[in-house]
Length: 212
Image (cartoon, rainbow, N blue to C red; front, side, top):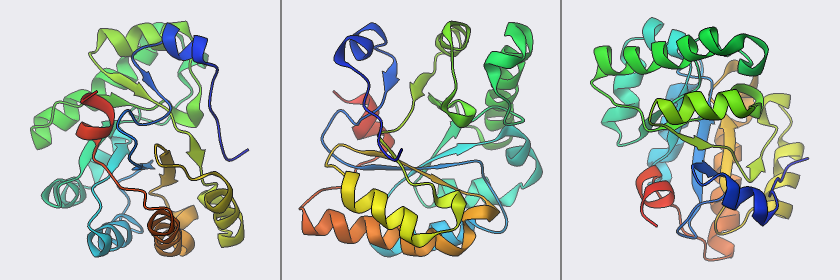
């Protein structure tokens, strides 16, 4: 299912969660990176269209691929927390879940001087424990309203999701990983084409998630 929009009662009960943007602009997000196979491909496409994105990075990759986070930041994009080892937090207990989040925050600050503001749980899976840990660490939980399924490496699948579900306030989830490599450029171009046809605008993490 490409699109997810929870009932209003859930949104009101979870004010630190985002499924849509708050300023009626599209926010592009990329999970799992940085990745030497794909990060530069994404940055090139984003630069072409003048879009600033939010990269939900795996802490282990932040630690391993030293130059790539710097490239992301130098292009004006923002880093987010996607755990240190891409683990389903609800399966590992509160101690290890806290460690996954805190280690990623620490690497981002120690190596790149970044205090992360946003968190996305791997696979979009979370529970009350996750919510508590994320809030304790001063992070906002960011899910999505449009999941592209780009990791299936099928442009027709991505295109169907974009054509049917892209809205002016969409948070779009793509992936900065090798599985998506062959469709990333075209996926970004399709999103931009649909946005232009509908006069949708793109925003930044700051405008879309913080300024209300």
